[in-house]
Length: 167
Image (spheres, helix red, strand yellow):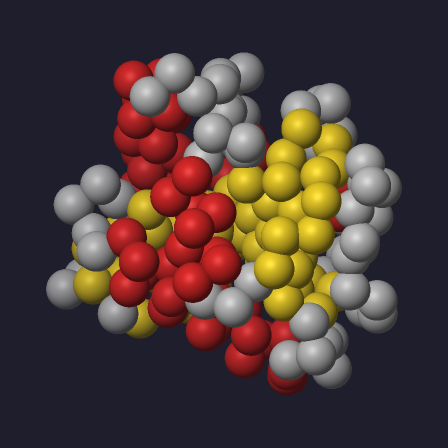
């Protein structure tokens, strides 16, 4: 698996992965991303900002995610959440092709994020999971994240807060 910054040439593949995830969420009666976001404009915005990354295997994009160091406010305001202190990176908008090895792919994403955090002098990585997004939450815990409470996204949706600190 190769993780790298996303390019405009990959935008269609990234958007298709988000569509695939939306369909899977609907089938599982999970309302995550039911508002149509991230949409194509979001994908281009993430690429423009240099915060979108892809995972490739055998030349195919099998996952995409955002790693953001801008201090996303949703990850500061909490509902009884105990975030680890310090500067932080935010891992979100994770989507994995349904044909890929999910745990291995998310593991590669987290390893990449931890390395990128270390390169930027950041000791904390934060993420969130929809309350019904059990597989992602369990995978984060398996990879050493701790559940630290709850927070609301910019659109008011509740998420469970996960944090890995002192990288």
